[in-house]
Image (cartoon, rainbow, N blue to C red; front, side, top):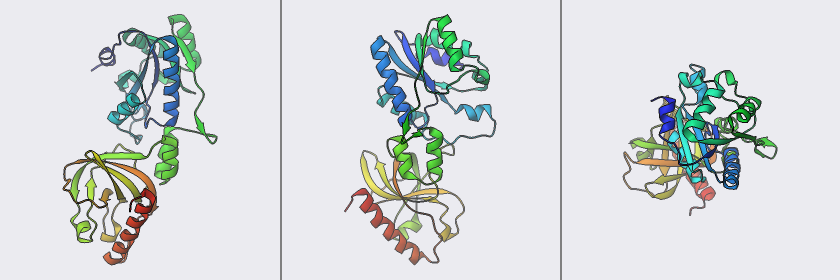
Length: 307
């Protein structure tokens, strides 16, 4: 499907005020921009909308450069709708789309999405070779009849909130910073592809989740987590790593749900990361590992407020 065909699927009934970007993670900086978009839309009697891209443009523009995503496309759209955005338009970022000049692209937004204005974050640019700078877009707006407003960066304690900063915090295992910048716990959703017999034998059965290779993951280690099973929430302990005590080499994500015994093979779980407990360690014996897991569970209960 071409870009024009995708845009045509979302043609609104009236004029719009738009913002454009990847919005990976829908973090606090994105939500601040959404608040401005919502307020300006209300003041002008326009429908606020967001145009977002998938896959990440950098992975298309630079072959072999994979940007680990903080949220799936489905999660991104849900979070934007929950933030009150009336119109969310996902576009497939292709090599053909990367060749569009800024005038051609904004012309399509005006034609298919009835764009009357743009609200954009700092240092924004679009179009081939990033030619659509803020100044260029303002000149195009003056000529084509749409407004362009730049909003300042959103900062916390002097730090600009960005998807890049959140990815780095995750890579460092810094759950506290990740949560502060996102405005919520980082989470991963996946299907239970197996249940660990070894874990059950140790007294701590785990659900092993499939991991999307395109997703950002926390640094290997053990975490206090909250696991959503169907319509319920449960305290849990999650390990990301290779299980070195047993000579493992493949990176896996396994979750032990506290005080839970129902069968969940094949179920879809969402795991929120609340706190990092420790690094992954190769223990000298299974008994040493069991002792540490008991301490991990006790620590998770304290952190999560579970008796």
